[in-house]
Amino acid sequence: MKIDRLIGILSILLQEETVTAPELAERFEVSRRTINRDIDDLLYAGIPIRTTQGVGGGISIADGYKMDRTILTSKDMQMILAGLRSLDSVSGSSYYSQLMEKIQTGSSEFISGRDSILIDLSSWYRDSLAPKISTIQDAIEKRHLVAFTYYGPKGESNRKIEPYYIVFKWSSWYVYGWCLKRKDYRLFKLNRMDKVKESKKEFICRNVPVPELSSGLNHPQNIILKALFDPDMKWRLVEEFGPDCYEVQQDGRLLLIRDYVDMDNLTMWMLTFGDKAEVIEPQEVRDKLMKTAEAMIEKYGGSKE
Image (tube, rainbow, N blue to C red):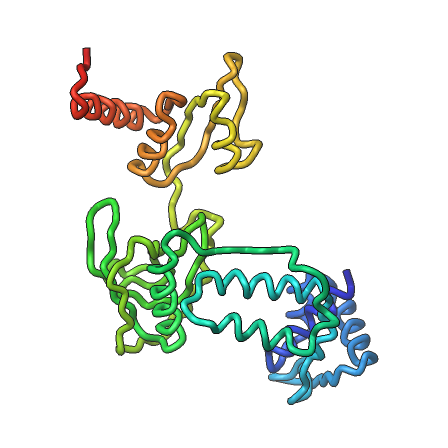
């Protein structure tokens, strides 16, 4: 919609000193002529926009101009407050609560009725997570290294990273940064981190890419799982992968075909289904499940025969 594009252009101009019409046209996937008309409309609306020609020229907005918050609708305000409230659920301080109060002050005409969206990002580990998140946030802001002990499937190790992003993904919290040990970008799960400390040593910020979390960049998917699940396990498959993740077979069982990341994690996940699931492929997973089952039988005093 045009109004959305106008608000988007205004937001960009408020954040960047100068931008060119071709850049705006490419960003909003419209023609340069359309952008020129949008700029005219913003001028007619009283927005002090300036255009300059030549090298280094472009479109800019007058210094000191601030966007009136009335441009935000009641729904916009509710979304902003819901987001802040969700961050407050894992914060170790009252920062977000204070920020919400600042936004709400004098904005009663925009915020009416009860909150319709409630988001709680905390977990059973809130007491241990909040200090880690706070420490990492401070380190990111100050460009300080973070040191910690990390517990992974292959054992524990001491790490130092240049932290860039705190990520909430896959129902867990992570920190994304440059690992000095691996010489590459890594994603570390906060619940596996211990003795998290902010170093006084500063680092020069890299031209770090935003992590493509949805593409599997940080967790390469290289295991193709084919497994059959009993019909009464449908709820678990739907919960984890959605209602279209399986194919119903002639015997009523549900066929799941998914990319998976880690062999050990996959094996442990399959074990949570007990005798309600059967791995078809890969054979390596079948073998690991068999060995695990045999070891459990031996441990509990049973017999393989």
